[in-house]
Image (tube, rainbow, N blue to C red):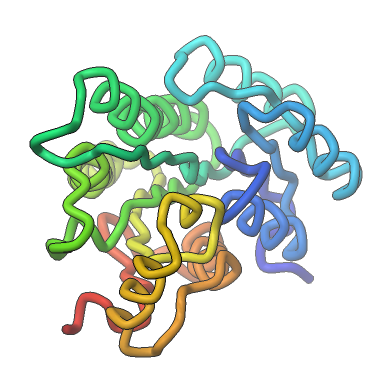
Length: 250
């Protein structure tokens, strides 16, 4: 038996990086997964390769109508919804307090924070009258400690917002007896396409800041998300899981 047998989950940012690893890990453990992403070509190809328990849905996480459609797809295809993994996120160049433009700020906050708000909102609405469930929101170590070399103001603000939004939602669901848990994962720097923003020297510096001496792997974040989506974590809500190779211990 799998750890997620008979569960249906929506994963955003599922076409690459941590999102893809989450989707693959959930499927390995028996879940049905709706893969949400803006990259339709990669998303459809991935869904086809993963088999009948995977469905792709074009999803712009900043659009409420897209979320309504994704939830409807999960319910129509698999009959119920048991969890959401809000993984989709972006980082942009020029994101510091002196150079961040209003356009950059709005774009980063839109995807990283508004998208998590909408995913959490619609996940709660779909699950509260049914079997309850679990919402896992990806934040970052960058909202727990300052990075003197990065100092990405919009990114840091968005991930800090995810942290406290999730705690508020967790308390709301607990107080109303919905049976829905909400938790955050705070990765260190992970070997995903987002690292393409860094040149070789910057990547070397980032690696040095992790006492374990390497970047994290998407699968290592997916393993934590698997635990939080499983019944093994049924007494866990409003919590933060820091998976960072010792980054925040320095």
